[in-house]
Amino acid sequence: MADDEEYRVLRKGTLAHRVTIVSATLLGAVAVSGAVLVWTSMGLRWAQQRQSEVFTVARQSTTDLLGAYVDQETGLRGYVITGQPTFLAPYTAAQPRIPVIVARLRTLTGRVPGAPGRLAAVQSAYGEWDEYASAQLAQVAAGDRAGPAGTTAALAGKTRFDALRDRVGDLQAVLQADQDANQATVVGLQQRLVVLLIASLLVLAGVMVTGTRVLLDTIARPVRDLAAAARAVSQGDLSAPIPEGGAPEIRAMAGDVRAMRDRLLADAHSAERALQALEQHGPAVTALREALIPGAARIPGVMVAGRMDPAEGILAGDWYDLIALSEHRLAVVLGDVAGHGPRSAVLALRLKHALAASLRAGADPAGALAATSRTLHDLPDELFATVLVVAIDTTTDTLSYANAGHPAALLLNRPARTDLALNPGERATPVTSHHDRTRTWIDLPSTGPLLSPVVASWSWAQADHTFHPDDTLIAFTDGLLEARNPDGEQFGLTRLLDTINAYDLTDGPRLLDAVAAAVTRHTTSRRDDQTLVYARRAPARPART
Image (cartoon, rainbow, N blue to C red; front, side, top):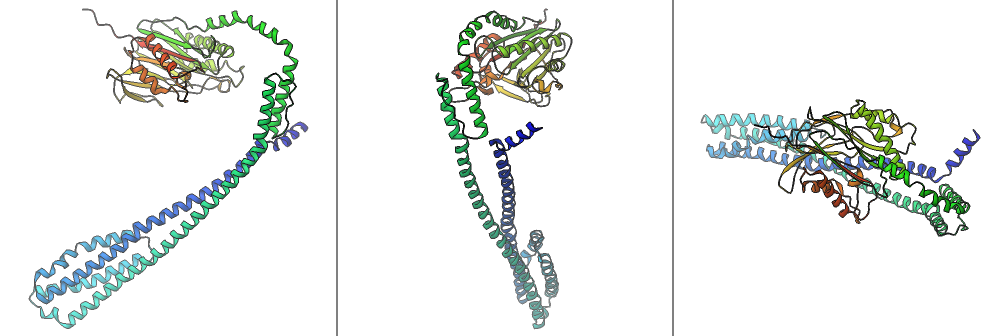
């Protein structure tokens, strides 16, 4: 209990603890300020949109409405005075426009306080005037021009039209007042947004200055001094002093460097014996390499080829295997253990035999992965592998696969159609080769987690595809796609497809050599194992006559 308490006290003073506290505080502040900025920006956008889409259009619409009313009043007076139907043209032209303008205003002003009532008052006043106008028109049409042109009728018409004009003015006043209030809101939100942005920039500048100071004092300078001391040790000065400043993590690293220096000094005399012992491992390495050589299993109607290029030496973390399950069934296994060298090769050999045993015992690809994963409980958690297991059956023309975190394999030379049946996560893409032949490739993505002691109890999904004559499967490890040129560009899937399309799919070894050559031309050095596997259904033989 005392040790736990001491550990908690020490942990509170570490750089990681400080960074965690500061990061949590900063994240909270950023989240709050971000939320306020987003809310303010949305409010400003809404207010500006309302200003342009509501008030501008509404003000213009009220002006158009008043103009239509004036056109009707002018046309009515001209017709009453002269009795000529041509004077009614403005009246008649304005009549169908008025309902359209009113409907537009009703939509625009529905949320403007007081506007719906004012618009209703306008419609009521227009109804009264329109009733008067209809009576005038009827009298003139009947030949009575004296009555409509009289003083009493003219005064009644003026009174009603003035009332209509006043109602339109009331509506315009309401719209103007709400527009002014909305404009004040826009100005206020703009000012708030500017203040928030300035405050955020000031806080960010303060954080950057403080963070830079902390990084320099607790990390940069101590790491520089420690690097200089470690460099001196690497150059043979085993008595070089090791600095002890900086954050607790840096001090712990300095302690490790000091321990390494002392260990090197203490073990200097055993270096020659260690070199001699390495020579004795030659036969074991050779035996391990030979055990990883893929089987030579074949079945009629399927052409297979493979190529494996280790990153260093003769031992790779990659492997592939070919297992004949029956006269018409073949299993293709491709795996990639993290890292390379003897340790990875040992795990690769273990996985190879476990998967082969499960498949020969009748397990399907998903079942073989699940059975193998249960045997990894004794491994360190940091060891893991990606594996693709494919089963080909020529009697049913099917290809079944399960993918444990491995790069998606390519199922090539399918018909150039978009209605292919796909499993979850798969995609079909047509590509045109250099011979103007369109091929469609289907990727076979991961159907479950990678193989690791951490997921020993997990299971994997399995997917099926038809595998007809002339269909081709090409699988590979990530070392091929991730090979980089001096500019840091990966070889990538696009270059792989371009290389495949430039060659005949029927010649597997030549195709794999072409891909390997393209990768070699792309990169100057190999940092990871690179493995390719090819499987192709042979074309159907023509029936004998």
